[in-house]
Length: 322
Image (cartoon, rainbow, N blue to C red; front, side, top):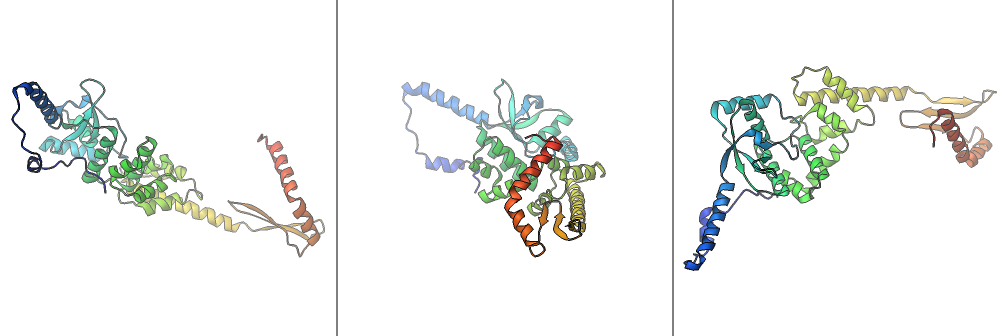
């Protein structure tokens, strides 16, 4: 289970759990003032503030493939009409009077379009807690697609986050994280960017696309397919177009392979020596012992040396070097 870093015990529960403090002695006035100062600082840190958007840096790991899209314009119109209903969360930056975004990137982008300040909760969180907050809030508000979660997992792993933090950030089990990682490791980054988040397209479909990588040039086909579509084509439809084109190309390659008939190699008298067959994956030379058993035995004893000599000859003629 993912741990929720936002829940705090209800105020009444805290009051019942804590014993009544003893009356403070006059000598502890300075300590009481210090405690009051700490309490005020905590209250301020958790309050909602109005912050100029240009004081907030959009750093951290990206958990969305698309940020500046039509949904940002729709969100901006909604905020213009009704105001910002849900605050974003930021944390203090190393630079004075600046902040770093934790979550709410879409809301921040929308408010930057329409102008004005952004309502933000300011929390002092370390990198792990910030990442968990980002993942939990995004899962609650707008569930990322399968491939967005997979990319987020990949970025978190490359950034050095521990497995437990990654699981908490997305509310996934260890097996769930592994299922996402296996797929994203098989897909070129450019292919995923060309298609986009593809909401509704799950692990099995992305896995089927990854399975075509050995049979068709996925990125090249994706470039052609996406370029032929209208600019406003939803990413789920882009996925279907790319997958259909890749599958067709793979089927065409398979049909071409089946049309490659084995060739019989014969001697000067027309007697068969061997059968040569090839496809996209291999080249095979087959000698039937019944046709020429002595030659078959001779080849078997010398095949390794002969292949090395042929390889060296090819390397010298092609200039491939060592």
